[in-house]
Image (cartoon, rainbow, N blue to C red):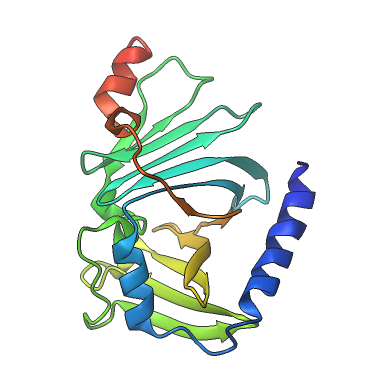
Amino acid sequence: MRRRSFIVTATAVLLMTGQAWAEKVPLNDVARYIQGITSATSDFTQINDDGTITTGTIFIKRPGRARFEYDPPDNSLVIAGGSQVAIFDPKSNVRPEQFPLARTPLNLILARNINFNQNNMIVGHREEGEATVVTVQDPKHPEYGNIQLKFTGNPVQLRQWVITNDAGQKTTVIMQQLQETSSIPSRKFNIPQEIAARGF
């Protein structure tokens, strides 16, 4: 599917699905939904801060693990696992860039316990058309940035997020449909194993 067509389709699905739920989704329902995600996957479209668009597949295994496999011609790979995030660049012959997961807004939805009752954690909770948008930050380290989550309701489902990093750059991820899976192999989130497989 062409990238622009995917974005149009994803937006249409978001609006149609949300028509049955016109009220703002309560924070407790949002937290309960995220907490209930164990293993899930979805195709996604990513809009980068510079306006470029990439597509791929995301795998989530809470707590603490995620994998972004990007489609050709990009072929990049991002893994969150073992409390680290690693960015693999297929065009480079060097080891992946790594940094602590705790320093990224993604950690806020991959954490073992989702608690939105902490002071200064929720910095936005509003309706946007037929969707609910919740903006979350690390209350101890707001300088790390934030993640803006977009949900439809009845039942609650995550459709999109926008991560604003510590440099103010925004990355939007639009999910086609996040689906629970029975299991995702742990090796998909094993950064040292991926590094070894690539000969580093």
